[in-house]
Image 1 (cartoon, rainbow, N blue to C red):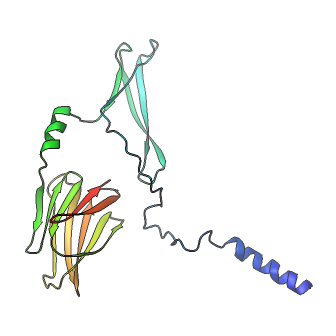
Image 2 (cartoon, helix red, strand yellow; image 1 turned 180 degrees about the vertical axis):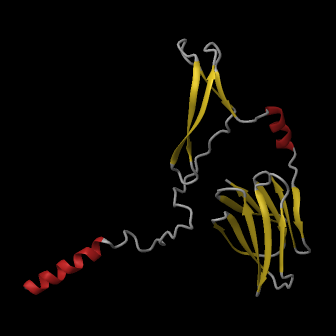
Length: 209
């Protein structure tokens, strides 16, 4: 009986180190942290205002708390050290024009990045239109650098092909490489995003989130 108890005591530390759920993959540090499936839609920032009391004479710094793609909250401080008139409100805004928004809503201007015989790519802000009749086999996201990978079914011998996108594009570079029975499209991004992929009439549409 004493030997059995000693044996159980020796095994106890191994049980403490066991994973909580062995069916989830181990995070290797190359993946995006797991987050909730619920995506909260927020309105675009137009302009926020803040009024300071009559005792204020200068702004020393501004601290912004922002939410990251993985849901964590980070703070960033900007040192200003400027004199102010407390009678006037303080604004925080992004470049925004309501009339331009209305025009854009009516017209979408996609810019061509690559046009091959069997596939072509057109970008417009956070959307990438992929025109092709080939079947999409799989798609996934990789990091360092952030890129979307899409595999399409086709036997082709074009070898490898790469092209940089236009200036300030979110989709910065597209590479195509051929494999046995399929070809792989690697879409390099300018930063960290999640994405959704939808099938459309002439192919597929990728939207960065």
